[in-house]
Amino acid sequence: MVLFFKKRIFINHLNKYSMMKRNLLIGMMSLALVACADKKEQENTEKLTVENTEVTADPKELLGKEWKLKELYGTKVVTDTAVTKQPYLKFNDLATVSGNLGCNSFGAKVEFIGSNSIKISEIVSTEMACGSMEIEMQFGEALQNATNYITSGTTLYLNNAENTTVAVLGSDK
Image (cartoon, rainbow, N blue to C red; front, side, top):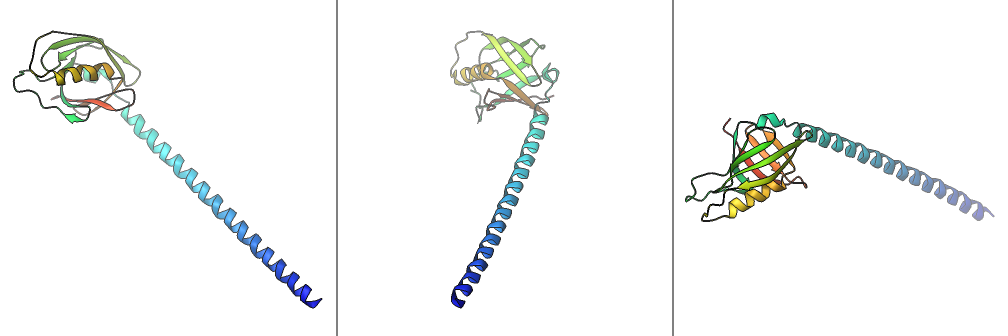
């Protein structure tokens, strides 16, 4: 009987120890969960702040400047030496844009919707025969695919619907 009593005390002691361990584990997991939730909220707040500063572009800032093409789809543009014109855009007003695609001049409609949305459509260009038409074709495609823009100083970024930069242009002004 004494052995049974000592065994029972030992089992009760183990149960108390297991219960304390379980409570400690639950407490640590709760703290970790709260810490992760706070970090996620902080990341979302930081992301929101960055997004809010990026989308404050004013379309009037684009007017009257010659925006020269610097990059297309992440690749630096090197113009053909046989071509005398560098590809560029010029926003004539808040409804039209013109410029040069690399060889041929063009004109198009432009719409600014919301804080940084852009739609360039109805592109009409001259039809001169030139050496390499690769940049010209890619630039025309980038203009049609642009759905939003961001300006940073003298740099204009045209982005597609997936927020991938399709063209980077620079201005002297």
